[in-house]
Amino acid sequence: MKTLEILGTDKVLARVEDGIGWLIFNNPAKHNAMGAEMSEGAVRALDAFAADDDVRVVVLTGAGEKAFVSGADISEFEKRRANAAQAEQYDSKTGGVHRAVRVFQKPTIAMIRGYCMGGGLALAVACDLRFCSEDSQFAIPAARLSIVYREDFLRWVLELIGPSHTKDILFSARRLKADEALRIGLVNRVLPAADLEGSVREYCARLVDNAPLSLRGTKLGVDTLMKDPADREPGLIARLTAECFDSADFKEGRQAFMEKRKPVWRGK
Image 1: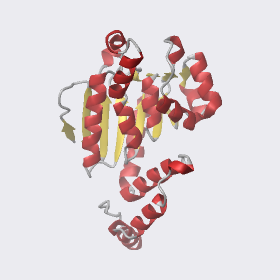
Image 2 (image 1 turned 45 degrees about the vertical axis):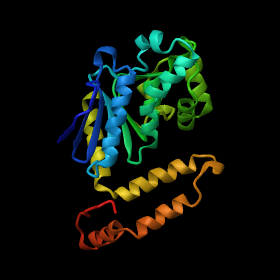
Image 3 (image 1 turned 60 degrees about the horizontal axis):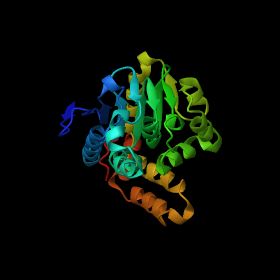
Image 4 (image 1 turned 90 degrees about the vertical axis):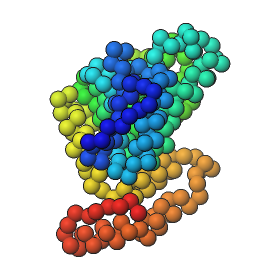
């Protein structure tokens, strides 16, 4: 296991273990509410994971048993988010981690237990997959604070669960339990709390065993097809396909299959 030092904050913990980058939001006294310091520290951790070839998949989770991320740190609003101009500046800082997760080129999984609210829900939907415990709760309480959810967050939720469910969640500001979140497609799996981490580790181990170029290409390909055709990079998917066929890993995969052994991937 390799522990990363995130300079300037103890609000984010990061480590690399068995090919998995663990990013832990560490403010359990405030249910891991997201402030500027936490967001900036998380971006630095993601940059380190992106540069580390040993990291094949990243898991985001919250410290303690009560929350993934409970939303923005409302205690910072009076000083840093009291009007539209301040809110825009504040969001540019605290939203950095959301954008960094959304464009991250390795698979990302949100491991959720307890509260997943507001900006915390946006962070979860920015990930590729979401595994949660049976005691998880989800909500976007923007209507209780006279806030309109920002455009990118709104689009991510909309792409995941569609317009009707998105409007329901935002209009009502109600809390959803894990079973409903699964039913509407907000999460991929619901597990007993005692089994959550073990199941996530088991799933990640499968990804670590798979070809990193395939994982990257699939992620970029799916994300490209979700864009408006006018916004897609022409020929991207064809180029990714060709790069895989021309890679050393494709040759290694063929040889390993014929020799009935586990392939050794280099990501090249």
